[in-house]
Length: 312
Image 1 (cartoon, rainbow, N blue to C red):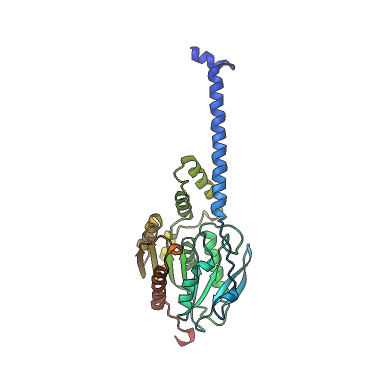
Image 2: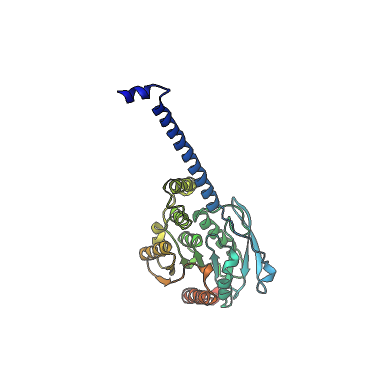
């Protein structure tokens, strides 16, 4: 009875203590929400240092292609002209990368007569905006295909796609949506954007913080609402029957390696998998990159040879 009387008494010490606990809980929730909001902003607006490399410093005849991304303004990319009338391979870089990070792969393909196109996703390199961890990046990859299909010096009926992380998601989604994609290579890909967001959250050490991690994931799901109706990549794999696919899993990235191999297992033929011990293309040594690039080149040579369309 004494406890009940104390609670009824506004001046009681117990009531005051409970009020203080409630205020501290509210304050803690606000602090956690602010931290989670900051994490969401930073992860969706990655700080990627813009390269100082200019188009004229690249290989001879490389040109800058300017185009418009519907709803998001002006964009540009670099076109490496290979054999006239040959297919274009479009390279879709990874999260916190930019187009210059895939120039060695672009050069390898170009030197073997492929036309190659590289560009920056939104929120990366010279492209303003933010990332969506895959869905809008798929639109950007489809836009790149449409831009290249306007050229008269390439095979406009067949395209190759390579992508890593968010670029891998974009490449698979674009291949499922555009029948002109004839071969696709994906590296460290995942089924749903939230999967990759959670992976990045865990890698930065915030996923183990229950309240902050939950709030950050909730915030990402709110920003992802415009794309919530889209099917998962696994649900779209059936449309990729008869399209050659290479899934590259980098063993050091355990979560992404597992998701990549799971998508490989769910994918229809023709399909190939390749497991490497490394964790990220950017951190590979020159020899490791050479091995990687040659494996990608070998896949495209077998599945999408650089033969002009008029001679097929």
